[in-house]
Length: 307
Length: 287
Image (tube, rainbow over all chains, first blue to last red; front, side, top):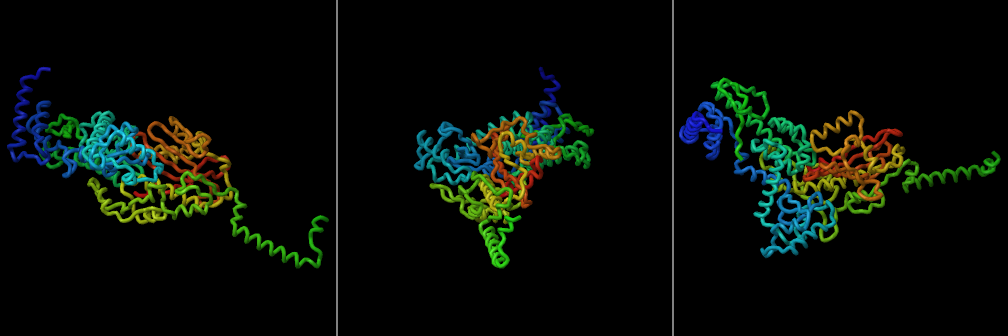
């Protein structure tokens, strides 16, 4: 499709407006765009839709995805820290609760070959040979303690170890695999707020993709981006610690609240008054699709969620 | 009548006869009390499989008490299993990284069933990575306690019930593997309609753990894998009726989730359905 002259002009104006908005005009500065992402985001929005200045300003004030917390600068790091807490971060091979040989952040080693594909090191810092790895694998796999073991029991049984950098790489690879599965299960996954993504990462790691797909009520809520209902339906039965359930529920509830707040800001901005256009009792955690107008017919606005 | 009369003593020996009768009765009662012979009057004594004994074999019911006291010994090179425990809730942090705080507050370790029960009472629990082992030991401990405290049943409606590929379907629906609210709703519906576990296993593959095994089955529906074991028989809830003690070990395909359960199942009339009589708090241990 060839862009019309009007669209090009609108886009240029739009980008110009946003450069001013993001950098030049303190009155328009938004606290909701950490880093320098706002010009890029808003520029993309302008090019796609050719909004009026007012609309773009209003959206810029409502459409944001705040960082997960101050200690992590990316979703992956946040998720990884949490999973390390729950699933462990073990540099030597051990038997997990299901009797599988495991290493690192819950990384299953089904065969000797799986273990030999990983970089293990001996005490003196030299790389472990395939023979060393096979020996260690067989010691762990052949231990006859059933489930009467904890990971630390295996520290003294083998001498080869993985380095933390390699464990992290391995764990990140697993996260990437989970991400693919999540994208397959939730077609709009990439548009979800980071908190929702973090919650789903925790659940898929713990339950596997097949069982996560069976959380019908939660998945229905996620399908319509109703984060509050998803939070209610996210609970896993014991022995998942209540703290872990609270963590996931808290993430989803926080996402729902942030969207509500964003709706409220957008309503005030577009309506020009203090009373929100969206009723606060509407607890659905999604913003309507793009297509908002100043008269309050706001039913099509997406939130942009940077990774 | 003549025969009976001939067995009775002559008139002069009546006093001697009565004396002997009283002595014999007292001796018999003493014998019954001392050697547990009172069980002979019961319909069904307590029986068990050793699969879940911490230090098998357990040859007498009294030995289950030792299981509760003994350290969780393992064969060399590993020594006694010790699981660190700490207060279960350090604080209320809905999103914050609170779990790591537990490790900083470790108070003690658990290496016997008695200590595990005590830890549960004090709301102590393991760090997340050791939760699996803790839950597994909790299952074993609750089994030991249940079998030790079980009574011989006065009456039984279970006949020679064994757990196999077909009888597993008769178990009550509450024994199903429940992970989500959706699963819970399915169980409630089955319960309300007086259906059995079998009504929920339509697409599942059911196998015995071993050939000729009559107390252990595995149910696999491709998503969840549930292992059910008939651990013991006896009266576990004190109503005089024989019960089944059934353990479950459940896990998910492709996930790290693992769940344990221990249930008392019974039948209260001849030909009646199997019903859930009691659930042990295995899964809440360490929460």
